[in-house]
Length: 119
Image 1 (cartoon, rainbow, N blue to C red):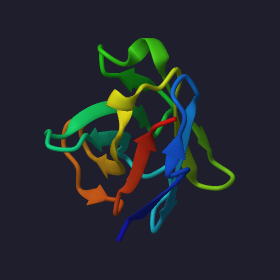
Image 2 (cartoon, rainbow, N blue to C red):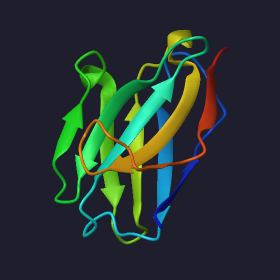
Image 3 (tube, rainbow, N blue to C red):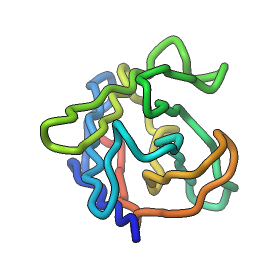
Image 4 (cartoon, rainbow, N blue to C red):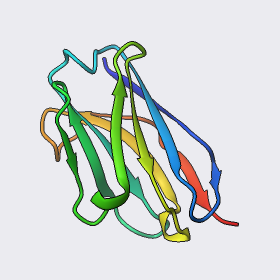
């Protein structure tokens, strides 16, 4: 059973860079055949897929966020991370990490972490 846990700051100031980490257990991010994704849900809105990384390290980004989003990983810690630069209050959301056998299907989810962008 794959388990995912997000971690990161709860509050970020506008124009700063948001950094989130997902710690994975019960499966390896480099050998389990999954897409490892970041997804967010702003208040009152639906889920938005942001980025994904494959087992082999290939990366995919949502077109609206590609210019200021970066996904990376640390295999030694079995973690993958998201960086979102130049945040604005519109980036306030619950951020989830998830994994699935395709880029748009998710078999496992983290519990989510609330991020608020405010001065």
